[in-house]
Image 1 (cartoon, rainbow, N blue to C red):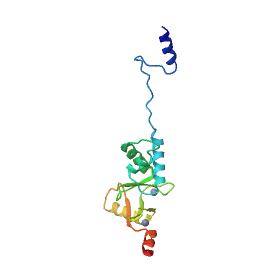
Image 2 (image 1 turned 45 degrees about the vertical axis):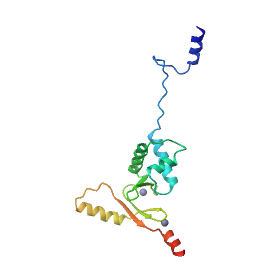
Image 3 (image 1 turned 30 degrees about the vertical axis):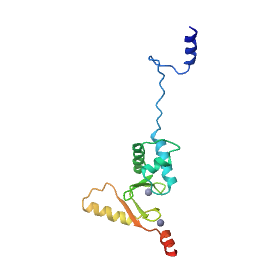
Image 4 (image 1 turned 90 degrees about the horizontal axis):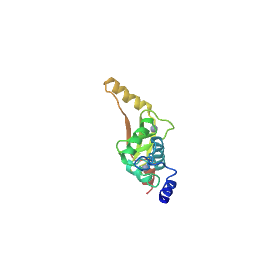
Length: 158
Ligand SMILES: [Zn+2]
Ligand SMILES: [Zn+2]
């Protein structure tokens, strides 16, 4: 009898269900919070990173499954907060405040630095070609590969 009373006292706060099991709410990070976390990680990286590098950099803050990160990256890319660099199979934070549409990148093969810039004339010429050819354009990513000014300079000094 006494034992029952003690048990009741211990269980006073969370009410168990009819099987005597107290269910804990499943802790799930809302997608908005996830996107913010991943977007911050991209910005902190300051260079193109893979989804696995993002997971690694957030190890102290969160345990993220690759598909969670890919889904979040898809949302960030759709909203213009991030871009995918096809030739590197990597992701980079958008360097503009708000970016919609296509971006042009100059990627340095030596330091891995990425410069994002606007080249509306080039983009227009390409989308005009697509329209003329009746090619339905889904996505356009322009990537210039080479050596950045800083790396060219340091290699000419050395
Ligand atoms: Zn951008
Ligand atoms: Zn460089």
